[in-house]
Length: 91
Image 1 (cartoon, rainbow, N blue to C red):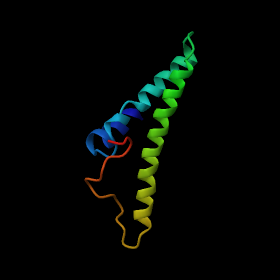
Image 2 (tube, rainbow, N blue to C red):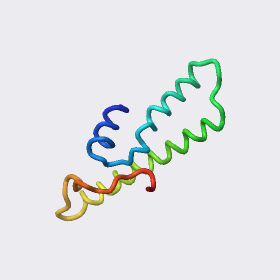
Image 3 (cartoon, rainbow, N blue to C red):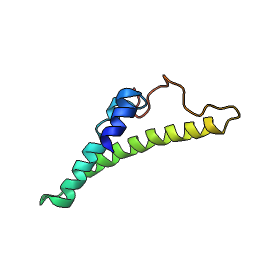
């Protein structure tokens, strides 16, 4: 899931800011470390992962909400306009 999301929505369509590119991969690596390696994950690592996840969810949630609003408008487009501002992290 990570590669298609990054390829389509960050690299190609520029729907989300590049800062979100590593979120899914880094969090998966941290989870695997916590589950399968003898050393535990520190509280600081877990808090950083949670912050990354919140930014990611907020960015994708904004996109979904805006898409639904456009869809529900009379005569609204089925697809978002090209060139919209990337979401995810404040510039």
